[in-house]
Length: 65
Ligand SMILES: [Zn+2]
Image 1 (tube, rainbow, N blue to C red):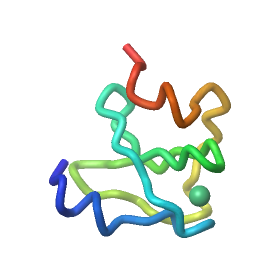
Image 2 (cartoon, rainbow, N blue to C red):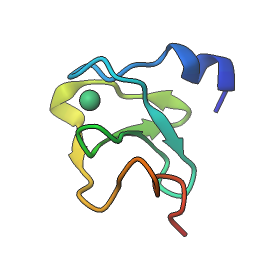
Image 3 (cartoon, rainbow, N blue to C red):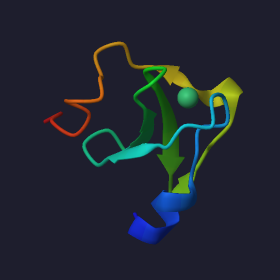
Image 4 (tube, rainbow, N blue to C red):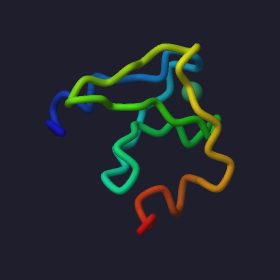
């Protein structure tokens, strides 16, 4: 995932910054605990494709195995 690209990606729901979670192949919105799937390198930043990821938080977003 391109770091510069990630800088301009924001959550389509709350417009907060997203975090890339390599272990999940998802962009995560820690504020709302939602994940947006990335398929073949293309982020699906659509509210209707958001997946609830209740276990994530701001502090541990990148600690998934
Ligand atoms: Zn959000």
